[in-house]
Image (cartoon, rainbow, N blue to C red):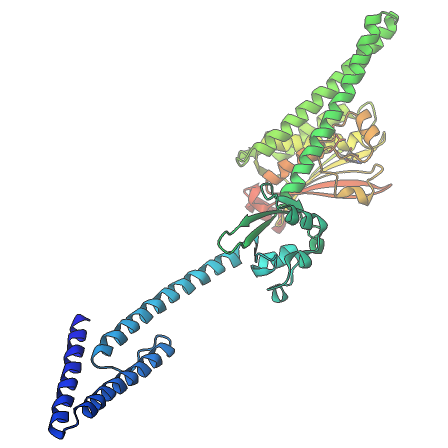
Length: 439
Ligand code: ADP
C-alpha cells in the first residue's frame, strides 16, 4: 500500500510538472495546471465509480484497477471473500443446528420479546397442537390458548417447569421450561412429553395408597381383637375364636407381603430367566395334585389333559408360581363343584398352556384390567377367599420374562380360560413336536 501511495504522489507531481511545462511553453500556466488537475480528478472519479460498482456487486470480484485503486479494490475483494466464507460457515452451522433441533422429540419454540413465535420445530406442532405453517409471527399464547400456560408466562416464575395438558392434545401431559436467550431478549421454550412417566408415577402413588389400605385392614382386626382380650370381657371360647380370627388375618398379611416381595423381585430383575429344562407334563401333574387337595373341601374337579410331551426352557420356579396362581384362582373364584381343566398342547405355532373353568365367568369390562396390581372383580369375595389381588400381576410379569403373554377369555355364566402361548423357541427339541404332527 505505501508503494501505491508513493507512485500516486509521483504521478500527481508528474502531472503538475507536465502541466506547468506545457503552460510555460504556451504562456498559460494556470490553465494547463487546472486542466492537468481536472484530468487527474476525473480519473479518480472514474475509479471511485468502479469501486462503487465492486461494492454493489456484493463481493463479486470487479474489474482490475490501476494505481492507488489496485490496492483498495484488492483489499475490498479480500474483505468480501472473507465475509462470504464467514457467512457460509454461519449458514452451515445454522442449518445443522436447525436440523438437530428439528429432529428433537422435544418441542422447541423461540419467542420474540413480544411473545410472538420466531421459530419452532415440528415436535412443537405435534405436542402443543400448533399449526407450523401459520405459526411464525403469531402470538404463542394465542395459538396454545391455555389459562394455566398464560398465567405461567405472565408470572415469569420460570425456576420451576410447568406441567400441563395442551388444549389441542388433552391426552398428553407436557413439562415445559422457559429459558431467556439474552441478547435480543428472546425466550426459548422447551416442552417434553411426560405422559408415560406421569401415569407411572400416579399408578405408583395409587399402589402405595391401596397396599397401605390392604395391610391396615387385617391390622385393624388384630388390634381390635387384642384390645377385647386385654379388657378381659370375653369368655374363653370367644377368645379361641378371636385367636383364630387373628391368625387368619396374620396369614393374610403374610400372603400379601410375600406376593408383594415376589412382584417387586420380578419388577427389579432385569436378568433373563434361568434356562432350566422344565418337564411340563411332570410339573403340571404336581400342580394338579396340589389343586385336588386345595379343592377337596369345595368339591372342585381337577382335570389334567396332557396332549404333548414337550418340555420348556425357562425358570422352573417362576413358571410353577404362574401356573399355580392360575389354577388357585380357578378354584378360589368359582363356585363349589366347578370343573377346572389344565391343558398342555404343542404344535408348529408353539406350546399352549391353558387353565379353564366352567364357573361364573368374568364380565368383558373387567378383562383388560385383571392383570393390574390389586384389581379385583369382587373385592369382598376375593378377600374372603384369601386373594391378595396380586396373583395375575405376578403371572403377567413371569410370562413377559418368558417371552409370552397371558390371554384371557371369559363368558359370564360359562366360565373363563387363561392361556399362555409359548413361542417355538422356548420348546426343547421342537423337532419332536413336528414328528408328532407328521405321524
Ligand atoms: P386375587 O388374589 O384376588 O385372586 P388375582 O390378581 O389373582 O387376584 O385376580 C384378580 C381378580 O380376577 C380376582 O379378584 C377375581 O375377581 C378375578 N379372577 C381371576 N381368576 C378368575 C377365575 N378363574 N374366575 C373368575 N374370576 C377370576
